[in-house]
Structures are given as structure tokens and as C-alpha cells.
Image (cartoon, rainbow, N blue to C red):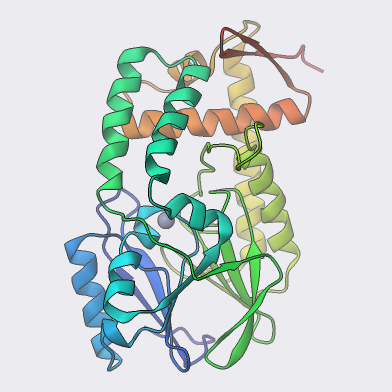
Length: 327
Ligand SMILES: [Zn+2]
């Protein structure tokens, strides 16, 4: 499918994923080097759809010369290693994506998540089922090595035109978007999706740092940054193109403000763990959604903390949050 204002060298298609998010959008930039933006999950139906989409344009996987990854989630990069083996394509992504996709990185992340869940006050039996669910997701990905790390402000060529790299941490710490200023076109990855609010996920601190990243705080800052930009069309990692990025960003910012207020009201005057707050907000969550809820509530609590609307006290490795007296 080609959208009216996309360049003719950019071919958009989607491949299925085994995840609740549904299909993922991939972008093929024709010309030298033949470039694929995101690779899809390591999943048979995705492999088949990708091969067919390439064939429609007269290519085989072996023809790929470059693969750019927007972030290290299995739905976007699970198949990358396999495509590289078949094509010898060079892989580019943010340095942080490289660290996350390196061999052995998954084991470290599992340890981190156990740690953060304890910090959130999640009971042991829930922790065990969460670990099981995470292992399920790692089945759809494989480690891959970067040939070149991309950073904010870098320029690269797609279809003979200059595209600028934007590092937009939030949904994940490594997420990049690509921007073509003359066409006012943004490839947004999962930073901006029309029908889904990109849940900022709790993540391990960057190497050499002990501070937990405040992903929602970063996400909102990066949304405001993109709102300032002159963009005619946004092509996202999932779902349809976005024609009014500013209206969508206003909606997202309002949603998070409302959610934060709701969390604050639910907390009352007690000092609660994140898990206790999540239990008051939601019931009957399966392990994956429980993890997402913990992640989301941590994001909002960290933001409320930065805004001075909650305080945090840590005891025995568990954080408790208390709302400040209403203004
Ligand atoms: Zn995604």
C-alpha cells in the first residue's frame, strides 16, 4: 500500500505478530542500499508475509543490504538475525538497542525485572507467573549484533534522500524515529501510534547508572518535542498513518494527566506499594497485563514524584508511595 504523500521508494507493509498489539508495520526503502526498517517477529506467519511482500517488489531476503531497527522489542526485531544470516545486510539501531539484543542480555533483563517487581511489592507467586510469561515472549526473538550505532541528529540516506535520526526514549529507552524534513514525513516506530497509547515500560538503568529511568517523564518530553516539529504525515510501527500528530499528542498528554490524577485519588492517604495501588485499580489481570499495569503505574508515580505530588519511601528494598496533601 502506498499513501498519497509517501515517496515512491518507500513501500509499506505489515506482518502478523503473536502479540496482543496485532500486526507490525515494516517499511522497505528501495534504491541503494535496499533498506528494511524493522524486521518483524521470529514467527512463521511473519516470515511468510515478509517474503511475500519483498517478492511483490521483485526482491528476495538475500537482496536486503541494510536493516534499521526502531527498538529492541520482539515484534520489531525478532527476525533480524535470521535476515542478516540470509542476506549479510548491515544492521543499524541506537546503541542501546545493540546492548539489549546482545547475546546474554535477556538473562540480565529477567534478573532486573524480578528486582523491580520486588521493589514494586509484587508477591512471590505473582513474580513466578510473570517470569514464565516473559520467557514466552523471548521465543520470538534472537540476539543480533549492530554494525553501526545511530544517535540523535545522525543523518542517513533512504531512497537517495537524507533522513534525520531522532532518539525518542519513552515507550523504550532505545527508540528511534526517522524524519525527512522536505517531505515532512516521520517514521515514528512505537513513539506515536494512532490507536494505541504507547505504554512506557519500566526498564533497567543504563550501564554504569543506578538510577531507574523515568520512562513516562521522558516519553512526555519526547511527545512535546515531536509536537513542535513540522510533520505532514506520520507512519507508525502499528496501525494506520497519522495526519494530525499535534491533536494526537494533545490527546496522549491529557490521557496521562487524567490517569495520574486517578491514581492519586485511588491512593487516598495511605503509604502504598505499587502492587497495592495496581490491585486497587485493576482486578483479574493475567501475568502480562499485570506486568504492563505495574509498569504503567510506576511510570505515573515517578512522574507525580517529579511534579512533587507524591513522595516515596524505601524500606527493605520495597518502595511505598504516598500522595501529598491536596493543594
Ligand atoms: Zn511494537
